[in-house]
Amino acid sequence: MSIILSMHSWNQYNEILKTDMHFCMDWKSITFDWNRARAFLVTAEEGSLAAAARSMGMTQPTLGRQVAALEREIGFDLFTRRGRGLELTPNGIKLLEHVRLMGHAANQFSLSASGKSDAIEGDVSITASELFSTFLLSPVIKNLRELEPGIEIKIFSTNEERNLNRREADIAIRSVRPTQPELIAKRLCRVRGYLYIAKSYLQQLGNPPSIDELNKANYIDTDNSGRLMELLNSQGLSLSKKNFPVISNSHIVQWELVKRGVAISATIEAIGDNEPLVERISISDLPLVTIDLWLVTHNELRTNRRIRRVFDFLVSEFSDYQQ
Image 1 (tube, rainbow, N blue to C red):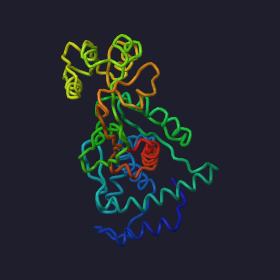
Image 2: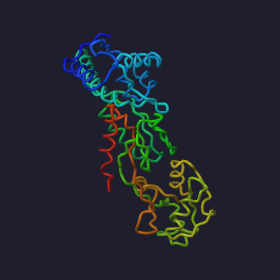
Image 3: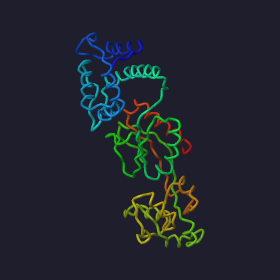
């Protein structure tokens, strides 16, 4: 592939070879190959050879040979393997900044020649809980798609935690701040949870229901652990397992059962207060639960423009939820 690069980018590449790195060969003997540099750039941005190969439309062995050839040529390792992904070495981090400038110059040349705009394109995968994905994330993704039509979003709606270190998702929305040093976490928002009951069920219990009536009511939990029962009893109720005749591990199914008047359950106020079929039950003046939500990504993915764009957009969109 023949391509014209700016002298500024080429000079920066030479400077890093002369000053920032220590090679086992003379830097002047290096013959620059943009295909190898691009293979390194995309691999660094995608975080793995498999993802980079898909992005570049080539086989993983071919891409791996190009990266290995560049490492042999410059005389040091660019990556170390971590699980299923790759982590940049300190020298790789230094080189990446300069190769990215070269990539930008190459991209600008290509866009200028084809008359296209400098759009951000590619896949970004987000994982979040069922409720959050359905009710809070969906309208935000609609806004994002209108602003960035080149970014294709993959949403993994699950209450199970996907492993960002293994690249099972690019961005995660979690209720617990991660402790792994390789993950970046930013507090996204704070949500409050309350009990909600269908208006049809509320008529049976009395409006407002007394503590005695609430102690006789039916509730829904996600499992048989008794966590919701313990939480409600700590708020002044006296419930037993007989009060939980329905169990569902799906929060969406739970919410549908609540709306149909089958039983009572808890959800966050942004969902419950906007549903006309239900009403909030206040056992006390305080929320039943308050949770900080965290936006999490892998630290290497800061080098990826589209993931950084989505990450920053989510932070901005949920700024109204900050408390």
